[in-house]
Length: 390
Image 1 (tube, rainbow, N blue to C red):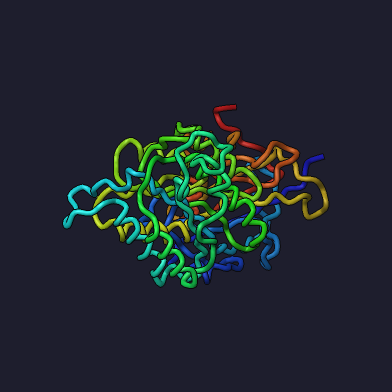
Image 2: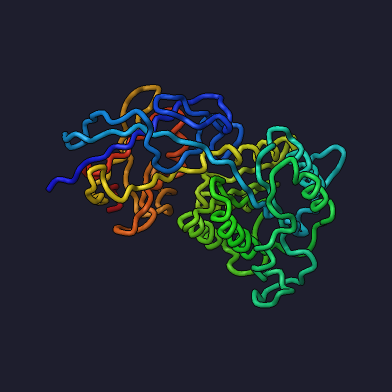
């Protein structure tokens, strides 16, 4: 028997609405937000899950010539709760190039945090913070010793617990003023701890998007793994897990070390790292943090258990198509095996888990950026388009 066909249409059009007004009904314009990888770029939205709108059904031709039933979709952006894991390693004490008057990266970073938490646009963002290496810890490498800088539970408990701005402003400012650069850079342990905290935080705070923000100035120098590609696997597991935790990276200074941090951001489902190399450091940091709070955080679409007539969904027959608002030309988006393949594909989507345990259709971060300037059609029950990797 031919499976009943469902089409889910997500229309995403660029606009300047704020997240607070992003709840949509069928046919509405969805608010535009800065995309992943840079707050200064335009476009992107934060929407997730299938929500049937009041528009009813209307016919749409599927790729194989059959007719799918289209459901208008209403989407709602989620407010963000961010756990900031802040690098206080010794290298943060190095001078900022060409700074006048001379200053260190730690000094400008601490000032930038203060500027961000006081910015009126940050109102309503949930922010908590911890520092790495952990305050008072000795250099690793033993991850089983509580006093070690590699002890993951140290980082799973924030020094300042997540709470809404501006109410949490004073605590965050006081925390960073009480710290100073010291010893080495235990990135992997710090990231694991931050993810663990948000994995517990997310289910306890429904209706908010949990994210980790890794703020650092370079390569890990202690605690295994230290290879950025292996640390990226930690971020990828969190992104593909339940609850889904996204990892953003804000990098200070310049050079190969920061470029490699992009691997962690991509694996964490957020495109590219925000790299701050020179110029107005504080302004760029504020833009990056505000951009994270309005980035297209949710490019995952819930798969219903059954069709509208009660028949099971056939995950061997999924068609994903993007239609540009500028040209109106449809583009088939290739199915990939997992998030890792997004790095080598121009555009793509993948299932969060192998059938029959799949619950979500996940769109690659670089594809998700385009949603503000077009429409996404997800057709369940239509033939599958598999990429060249299959």
